[in-house]
Amino acid sequence: MISSFFSLPTHYAWSLAMMRKKILLFSVILLPLPIFLASLFVGVYPIEPIAVLGVLARRLTDPFGQVPSDIFDVVVFNIRMPRVLLALVGGIALSVAGASLQGVFRNPLVDSYILGVSAGAGFGAALAIAYLPGVPGSVQLFSFAMGFTAFFTTYAVAKTKGETPVISLVLSGVIVTALFSAMLSIIKFFTEAERLAGVVYWMMGSLAVTGWAPLLQTAPLILAGFALVFLMRWRINVLSMGEEEARALGINVERDRFLVLFAATLMVSTFVSVAGIIGWIGLVVPHTVRMLLGNPDNRQVIPVSASLGAAFLMIADDLARSVASFELPVGVITTLVGAPFFLYLLRMRGGSTWR
Amino acid sequence: MEVIGISGLRFSYGEGFSVRADSLSVGEGEVLTLLGPNGSGKTTVLKCINALLKTSTGRISICGRDISSYTRSTLSKVVGYVPQSHTPTFPFTVFDVVLMGRVSHLGLFQQPSRSDRLKAEEALKTVGISRLGDRIYTKISGGERQLVLIARAIAQEPKLLLLDEPTAHLDFKNQITTLSTIKRLSKEKGLAVMMSLHDPNHALLYSDLIALMRNGEILICGPPEDVVNDKTIEEIYNLPVDVVDHAGRQFILPRVEN
Image 1 (cartoon, rainbow over the protein chains, first blue to last red):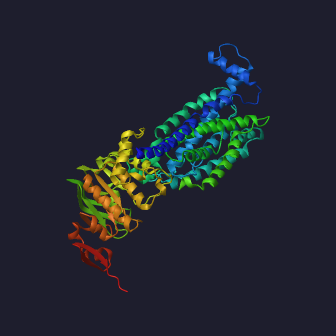
Image 2 (cartoon, one colour):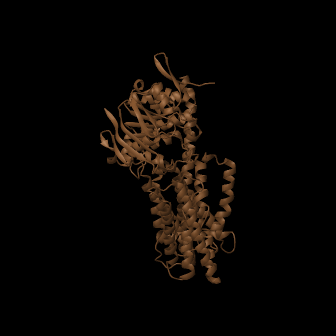
Image 3 (tube, rainbow over the protein chains, first blue to last red):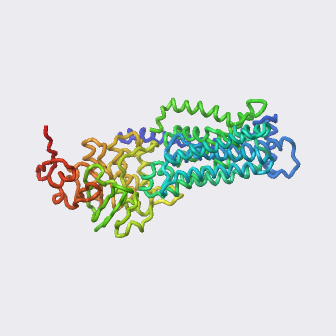
């Protein structure tokens, strides 16, 4: 009787801690939903909240807009909503790519930049903006193609004797990045001033798209990449133990690592093609998630990173649309928020999650 | 019953150093120790057996099947491997590290199930470290870490256990704890064990078979009493030693002059 009385509190405390963790997990996972709804109320064009609600209510009964609509409907449903959803899938793409690459490379400072994907996609898009202006889909296609080219170049250069040591992957990623950045500089140098502005603005990263087309072109590819990583999330744990150990435990390291890298490249270059280079999310979000959870287990880190990344990019884009009378590039905001926050986390924790 | 048999094995790191093992065999419940100085090829032999290195010629048969007939994941269901030094980047819990031993039993897109978690728990219990389950792997002592890696190999449910210098970097007591655990697991579970060791006395205390290695070659292999004497030890280490009998056991003492 006494022993059971005394054992009760410890068990209770344990389950309370578990419960608190579950609640935290659950609320972070669901976070994008309220932020998505709230983001529909934000924008440069002034609309009363009640009018936004009116549009949403009308669209609930008439989802395809058969009834002739007003300007509010166009702004909320055809401009704001696809844009907010683009931020949502973009946040998933960048943060999940970051989290999975960090796992596979066993390196906390890795994200899509290290593979040269961003630089490659950036070069492709700049090429299209400067030399094929107004050709529909050319920016997407070129940045997508060049992102993959950069990834395969990095991978092929690093691969020796059927193996791809992490060090040579990172090194060849740096070289490929330098190469594509140099080519981007050449394009900038030879581009006329008016088109150059377009290139520069795109490079700063922006979600200023109109209509549903960009979202419908990118979301399926991003979600496919995410599904692949999500299914392999536990395997990423094993891959993070290092090449030889993963192999000894029974993993086909070459195949599995390629699949994860492929998925990450797919997600990032797809998103870069519409939104330009938006930095820091792939680095800041997974770190924050590992610290929040107090656990590097990718079975939780991958889905929670997806949610937090989506929430972060939606909020950053809300700020980009609302802090000034004109729009700021959202990439500037993620960097302004992300870099100091990252610094703060590192100072607070002394980088202890990595030791 | 023979679990692992090797004949005419050759491995070469390009030019220069090469390793040869003409004949080795370990049965259920037997512990074979590879003993020899640094760079004598012990690790290379272990890695060849685990297909981490590809041999140029020779035959390795595991549970009656040639090693080339195994895929990576089927081999890891039979061969458990405990690596030498270990520096993981991420602070996983001990339990999650042990759970990774189950990966060869799971499909590409499968997550560990309840039965995998039970097997990991059982492996912790078998090794006697259930209390460590919730601890952070990067924050436990070197001796505890070694036991965790053994538990992870047990979670693979292997027939053959390979350990690369399991006592490296451990203190006096932890060396003995680790080796006793290995010996006990071998007898309890009928595991064939192959490990490399540096200390001839450890080899004498815990092995059923000892293979002496030097310059990439196995000089002699057999029961400890046949293999280990002052002459053979002096030959492989190039160091004068005395063999001392104590409580019915043999011990090797280096002959130090000062």
